[in-house]
Length: 563
Image (cartoon, helix red, strand yellow):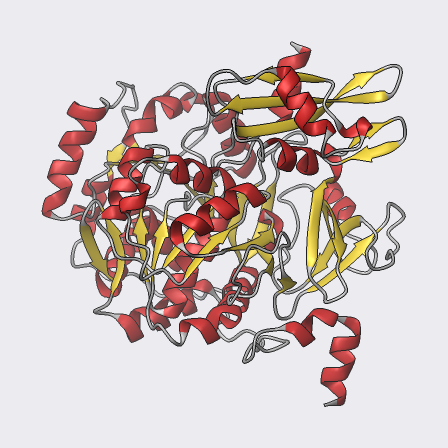
């Protein structure tokens, strides 16, 4: 009892945890992701682990495919600690390749398939993987810089690989109906199907994988300069899976194995941990969506599926809610709708609640924290506007620029400490040192306040705060107001240098319908915001630049004004 009271004193959020959620997770229940996977494969073998393009794969079938990848990598000379890159959206082959890499003792390097050749070259040169698995649709990007990448082998994945008989049809549609695979010159590349043929019936050699081995090099978005590879150890990712499982366990116990709609890309840490590894840990399955940007196709998938959890970001929920066929989706089996990756806007959350009957459970984290630090209670009935409470075994401290804790209710930088925090940045010791406080907390760069019950409310990114005549303007606050306007679909706010005030507030708006004027928006904002927060100028756009998970790229908007 004394220990619990001591924890609550230092971490007031613990007193508000859902019943049955522990303050701390057990230390290293599965020491590595490989241990976790082997346990799940053994326990849930006949269950469906993945579904894609109408085809299903059991845990045992996924394990067999992963073993074949491991065999091929070992035959190709992969050594423990070598890096292997995957450049692919959510197709069935991705999880099998990832598991094969980890079983072989390799380190996974996730690569965004939408990268330009320049972006790809930077990441491959920085991470120096020996092998690259790439979906053939994006092979032309690789070919453009292949002579500078120093890759030993390139393996081409077809969209229909591992889909069984359905794969033939999927490959045909991919190549000849929807979008032809761009022609490219990769003479030494081999097909993933050839990898599977060459390893059929063979067993991999056992490799001793340790908790402190690097499981994933997860590259940050690079919005503040060159992208950096966060070194996520096996124990970091396992801890975060266990933290999330503990947080949701009381609610999930009433449901049993769940099906999670996995539309966010697995090469992003949000989907990798919170979707794939969470479902593998709990014996559920992932409904893979290869192209969530195809909203009509995505809605069609939802209409034809029964699912329990939907994971998304604000922009995805917004466009889904606006699609005319979304009301034909059956949400009766849904237990949770979760959001992360960017700030969830209240207007979008209300719209989704009216549509689906489910409040959006918002979480918060970063690539460097595997990623989840905080989450709303799973039994949330209405959108809270906060990111909830720190997960078990997680410490959050709000600090000022000097690194000192600020009083409760005062805004400051979120600093986090816990077993899910990365080991550091790949080959960047100075950046690692700068990201950590002297007492071992990771500096997130996000501004928040802690509420009396221990919940945290994100204010904005530290680097995005706009200073107008000495006053702080948080873009999130202004964006929240703008999207409340019935004629606004999306909005983004940035600061622009101005001699008189230091900076001025600039808004980019995507109208929902014709007829919206700058005067309408300015009057709307003046009714709801202090004068210095009202945008000085509005730019209307057909769309806003977004990252691979739908986060609006304010840096790109700033660059567009400067060019």
